[in-house]
Image (tube, rainbow, N blue to C red; front, side, top):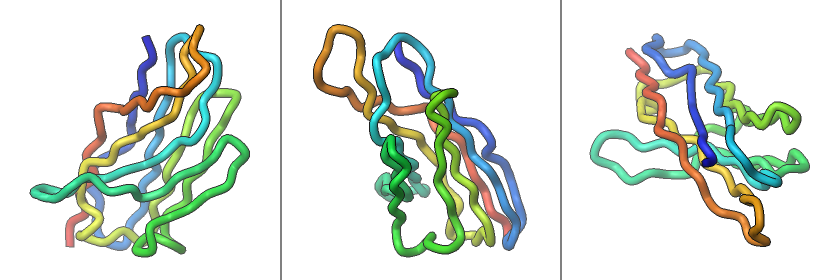
Length: 121
């Protein structure tokens, strides 16, 4: 079974920083794109940042220049460094990844359980 487990979410003051981590475990052949999403109360889940296996990144406009996504392919991990946090960044942050299970050619999208980030004003 493939699992994605996030960590690092907590309460932080506006202007502060947090680093989220997500670890992939289980049996799989490869991990392609890895993403961070967030879902604020009463809102839909939105993509925040994405990174390819080769390291190419993309961000939603609202976090460009403040958030940085990175990954460690050897450790099967993805990170989200969040700086200059704002109260509107409060949300549950989810890790997602396109993972190739054994015996399959195509990848399957897996999701973590989420980690709560709360930014106080």
